[in-house]
Length: 118
Image 1 (spheres, rainbow, N blue to C red):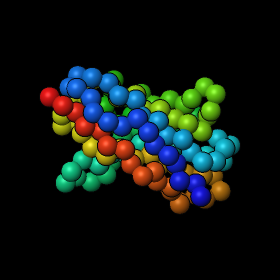
Image 2: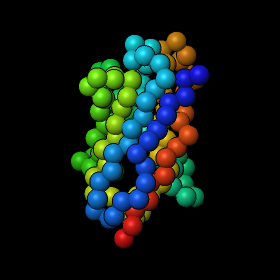
Image 3: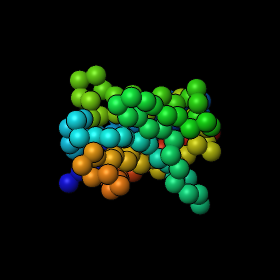
């Protein structure tokens, strides 16, 4: 219970855009934060974007190319808009949710692969 569901990964051409979706399994009222992480082959998983009730965060390397937002009608769904993708940006993207009544126990999605063709 609590695991988010991701969608939207796939293949994109260099310079192109892709939008990922993450749907939490519980109401927005019980969500502290939702974030996106990515893990490229041979590298550690890193936080690239996060949204809370009062703030958003984009990692420095993707500033101006990533946007994180909530669905207007389903606030427990967040999107990660990724623009200007390059082949080196290929990675598995994971959604992570922290619920207010389970602080310190993050719930991870299964991951979605993003591949960028040159």
